[in-house]
Length: 132
Image (cartoon, rainbow, N blue to C red):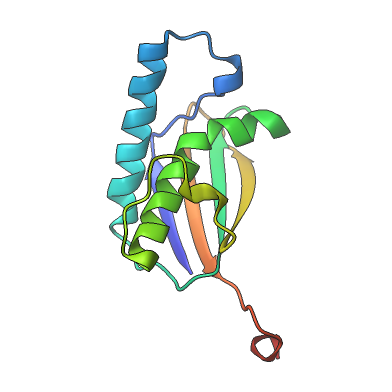
């Protein structure tokens, strides 16, 4: 298992955002760059993986907003993980539907105006003999 904690990364629900498209594009580019930088610091477990994305913030999002808020983080993680595993470069937004990755989302409440995310990558067995 590998675990990454990214401090001070505040995710915004894109479904409720009225920001100008250039502001959104800049935010997405920054999120992906930060995630890529942190992904380089860990050893990626072998595929298939369960990747758990956790948002730590004072106020939780509802079910649909948490998925949308993690959109660009999910893209960056999947592009990095599969790029390492397959030794190729994936087009933006195309790697996150790979069947070798199962996605889970969590939220934890923080006490103050503290925002961070954690990314956990865990291998899971694919054969019955691996389960014994």
